Amino acid sequence: MGKLLIVAIFIAAAVITVILLSVQDKTEEVPELSSSNIAELQAKALCHEAIVYGMRNLNDGTVVLSSGENTQTYANFEIMDGTIDSIQFMSNTTNDTIEIISYAGYQSAGETIQHKSSALVCWIPTHAQGAMYANGDIVVGGSADITGDLIENCDPPLDFEDFFGITKAEMDAIADNHFEDPPNNPAGFEDITWVSFANEGGSLTVSTADWTGSGILIIDGDAHFSGGSFDGIMWITGELFINGNNGFNGAIYCEGGINYEDVTVLGDCQITYDWGAILAAFNDASLVLEYELKIISWFEDE
Image (cartoon, rainbow, N blue to C red; front, side, top):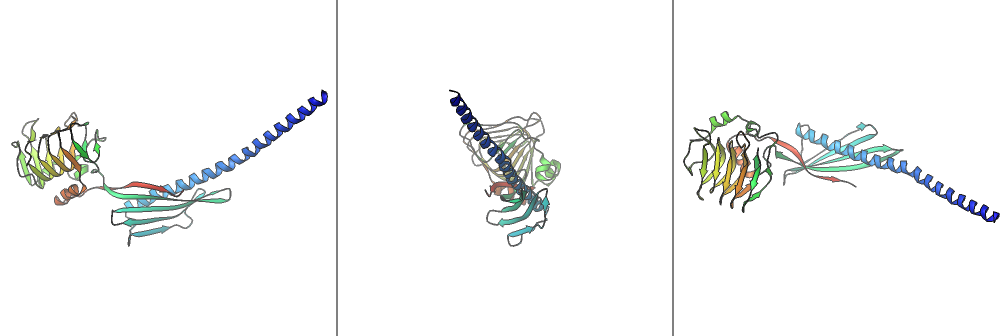
């Protein structure tokens, strides 16, 4: 019985020893594995920083694309234990995009971990990226069809001068057409049109299907559309109500008055974000759009 007990103790000790050795081996592997993962993350982070740096160079004009391609190669561009090797720029004139490709490496345990990241970027208008902007809510109902982003509860609130590059007074001064207290369905809304009202609460009312307009329309008051169509940019300082079979191509901006009243879109209207109509309106008015460089897609070389 005593011998059996001793044998059992030895067997148990052997099993425990094997388990402890196995655990020890795994424990020794963990720092090595973690170090490798950290190095990969650091290399990826360096690539991301390189792309941001490349975008900054495009913004300030440091990088000039000749023949659609430009490569910046860096010698000993070291950051901590990492190195940015190069940033490559490739433009596509077909869709006005630029691909930025970055290569970086990170040192870990005597080994260099290499990584490649790329981003597709594009110049887009800073304040003209949606079909409709509003300081209040945008309520859509009925069979209304809106193609493009709805940007509601703007924060910060809509700023006329930020968008057009001139003040309201300056826009009023260069407007081609002026209407004060216009009748229903007024004609002649082309180029830059400024609509105003003698009394607070005045509203532009359009109700006929054959009403048309184009260019830049500034309504210094409320607007009610139950018909008609417009191509370009509409800016309404007061409330906006759309209800009917009508079409708008370009972009609509509604301040919503002092209380930022909601925009209501009902009926069978069609509102479509149209970059061509926006650009044409600015060009015809000799105004300059503000642009920003924005990432539209991102790729990692796994």
